[in-house]
Length: 371
Image (cartoon, rainbow, N blue to C red; front, side):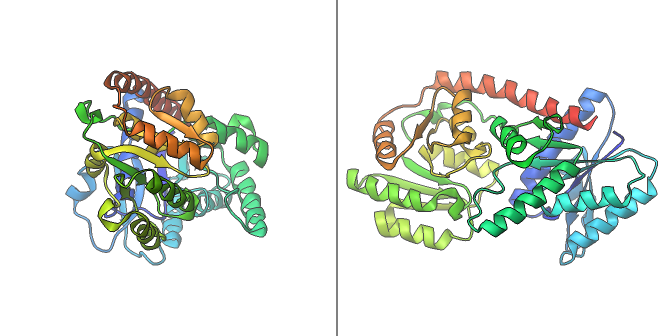
């Protein structure tokens, strides 16, 4: 595969989420070049308001070729036209278009492949979570399902981040199993330190502040925990449409002095959060992969997570640190017990070795799909 494009309508060089995605693809491109012994760059378009100097474009991304596009308001259309122009210019070169999301970006790469049907263009989609079942409206759910079936069957390869997502796509969306491969998101390994010790004190909620993450159940849990002890402290890291109402309700239940809000943080800033958190309380009714759950365990923070396909799969990978609950009473009992327990450093080290091996396998699966 000569030319690889990562196609995303949301990327900038300014926000933290885009930085995480770009650093991840820098890691993939580096592994690709190491395995092929070639110097290939993954090409990426990003939104920009003004000209970007070369130092900003290459500060972290030695293996990416960053192309700024300056029309932010019609970015998806501009992105499509720029990709079309590139395809025409290199019509004889094999091209791989990797869709950044399963909706807009997948539509862009699918239409490009159809328009330039005579060119050697391949496409790849990525699925990181349940895209249908959390939609309450039956009509919207049906429309989403039909759209996904068309897009998935039009794609040459499909990356999923967990085995249970692979099975769900095959069973529910009538997609050929041969197209799908499992490649979890690689997990950054923190420095092994004494951060698993007894100085941790917070019960954390980390992630998007959105109803799909089980916010109402989290509030129900802390109401019950309030009855157990007035000494529990809570930390919230993340952002989303329900931020103000969620934080306000926590403060009303436990008192504002017992709540710390850190906002949306970079990976580097999250290090201080993990150092302070004793327990990650994950109330999401569904998990595609559970990256935060895995990061928590690697940082010596216990996880108490709602039972679902994603957490059950994670439990097979981690036999220490992850506790699954089915009802509120069970979760409350787990919190009370684990707040008095010290995380095992020896278990952290074993987990790190397993994750390091899993990271290598995941990246190899991904770059092999590009060749």
